[in-house]
Length: 329
Image 1 (cartoon, rainbow, N blue to C red):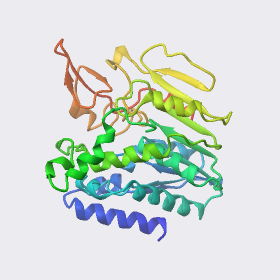
Image 2 (image 1 turned 120 degrees about the vertical axis):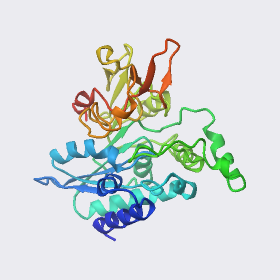
Image 3 (image 1 turned 30 degrees about the vertical axis):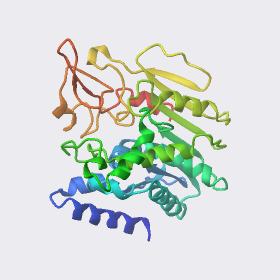
Image 4 (image 1 turned 180 degrees about the vertical axis):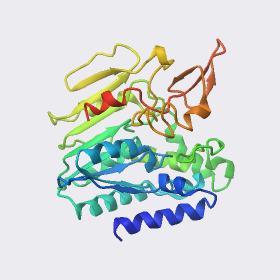
């Protein structure tokens, strides 16, 4: 199957699972291709994160397209339709999807790169380790899931197994699915597959150049583990950007961008927002989803919360430092 047929197959599956979804929503959740005006024989595969869809990669895709890259973005199995589909997937299904995307892209270009967000970054690192004879120009990792922040992540496998007998154990908590391009309900089997995948890359060493970008205040993945993984890689061309709301000490190959914006009531950057432009129509500063979650402050919270002083804090869905980030990509 070629990549165009794959896109159409995914669209049909999304349409069947979400019969009330409009054409725009189906497009946003589907894999996509962005072709450059002038090809330079460079291609990049984009891999979204857990609970997300290819939509979250679109701002970055436009950047690479403008730089002459042929861009392919895949849809990870279990995503883009309904959360319950994540009860039946394996991380091996995601690994196979990455291999398909790379093999399809190889038919059109000679220089290959991969960019992944969160679990997508973990999949990119795993691919490079599993295919040492497949040269990659670079791997771009945004909020990489080198380890999950929750210390109880290892329990998700057992609890999801109980879900075969106790349906309530299939998910952590059900939320209203009010985001057209991201699941809010967390299926525990999906979380277990992410945890399993992070274990596969714990001690790997890669020779290809790496780029890491992450928030020190990330609420989902472990910042310290990502930093340690980066420092253990030996390619002198590796570089990293740390977003922090404090004066984080910069080091060799590690740049720091302040993430707090007091004048905008922004406390810090969230896990989810790192790759999203402030101009994004859905998640940006004036995006339709952002405007539904108005609050006094914005930061790295998972759900809108109320502080002791009565002020409400909502997740920041975009990166105010997106342009500064691109200078390092």
